[in-house]
Length: 63
Image (cartoon, rainbow, N blue to C red):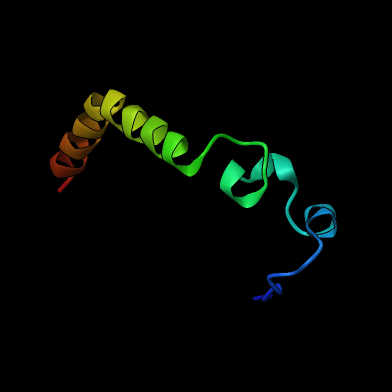
């Protein structure tokens, strides 16, 4: 675990630790906001509901 000071040079942080392409905009990155990412994930889970239902049915059938 590495604790980074709040006044750390963000260019150095992005170069050494986490690239901007991997962070949401709230953290200085290039990705959409956390809220948009969250909404997309919720939508994806809803779209996969039949997959989860089938998987659960299969697991119960194996018992």
